[in-house]
Length: 239
Image 1 (cartoon, rainbow, N blue to C red):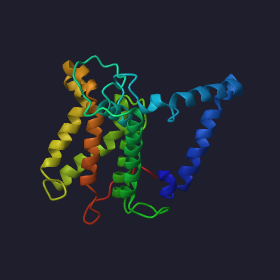
Image 2 (cartoon, rainbow, N blue to C red):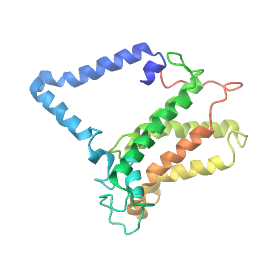
Image 3 (cartoon, rainbow, N blue to C red):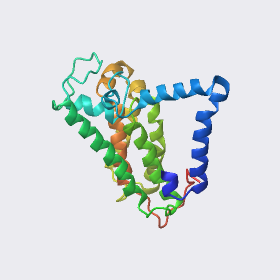
Image 4 (cartoon, one colour):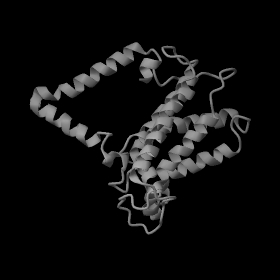
């Protein structure tokens, strides 16, 4: 959708073609009937209409909005964590929690329009702007989709690099206040807590620190838009 919105017609077309090819080619070797069966079983595994993908608490290592919202909004979310600390802020009915999850996802998707800031079928205002908006889209992926492990949040590193670049270029100016580097340090600790604070790994997983780090990073990303005048363009991540 981003490629279509930004009028990257060749990239959009080639992506569709390769998705079809990569899903069909195995059928040549294992048979189309078996390949179709595999695709169907995969769809059953990721079908967003299933409750198990809205209340994504089957594994303690999962991180995303579909994991955080249930544990915050339900006393008994079905999570397998054995850490004896309560996390829920309230105890809502499952249907109410579903609507909160849908709303949170919708707000993240709608937020992309705030970053794009142009009408459809037009290129970004600059390559710097393209980096900024694309970093947000990548960061949203592990937050919106279920079954996300720690490694999925590598998609947040472009936004982390944006923060570092902004810090180096703008110092303590009005667009990058003294609070932002402290928040950036907090995000770094959240993303790497299992390594830096391994003796608290179970507790960090229990409170889903990685997901909260990504949400803080979104706030930082909103606070640091590109300044087009007087800045050197950077390489765009999308051609």
